[in-house]
Length: 352
Image 1: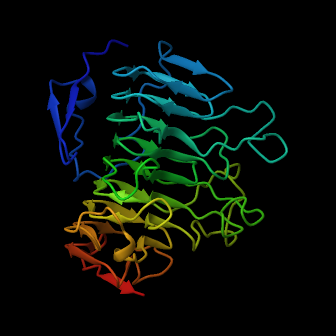
Image 2 (image 1 turned 90 degrees about the vertical axis):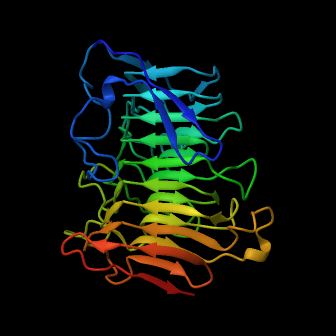
């Protein structure tokens, strides 16, 4: 397949916008309008995946990328995890298959290492990572696999299925600073669910806590225009489904967007707009923070959760009326959050 030259992406200092120079064939008119078109399995993710000219990278060990300013295009990664350890690495039309097992999926009987992500952006050298039209779907799900974890990345029109979580957002090197993460126009759904001993599938529980996007610390994460489904995969080989028996397609310990604070920093000034969310315990769940303990957080955003506006909400939440739930200890801005079916207002509920 012949590809025209890639765009050059330029990041501004606050990562509030992307400046495009030139065009590539991925952006040719396909009817997709950012933040208006609902992302689906057919308009997101890798394309032409059966093209015999696609490159395959196969290995049983993690793949570390240490050379900056490299673009990986039309590549299928059959490795446990791809680790970004350099600046300005780009992935265009790639497929992340995860670890391969000759004898079946990862279990405690056939693996000593359970990898927790397909693309690892936690290294301090990861800056300006860009992901477009990629698919993150492990061939052999495990009870920790997430699509992307880390900081300083942009994910655009990509697809996340068969993992426990779609995204993890936090910075391990420095708490309470900007994450420099933008999650834009992606499809996240069909999650993997597992049961087991406490501390195996989840530190505090005996079952998976599925989250489409889990923001665990850091400021100014941008989440715009995504379809985030809290539904479990219907593939009987994915995890140990299902949770409540036949017919239940989601569990009570999941959220489309989950906000945590305290473990790896605090979470402030998150920008959550124009998303389409359905099928979870709650669409958005955020706990409170002790603003006096959030050392280093700029005073202008301390205790400000962020913006929650223009989101479209489905009717299949496990807890109707609690789709958008925040602690009453934080402030926020919320406008024009409505139900998909009739446009009625979906109010933010506070508790604490």
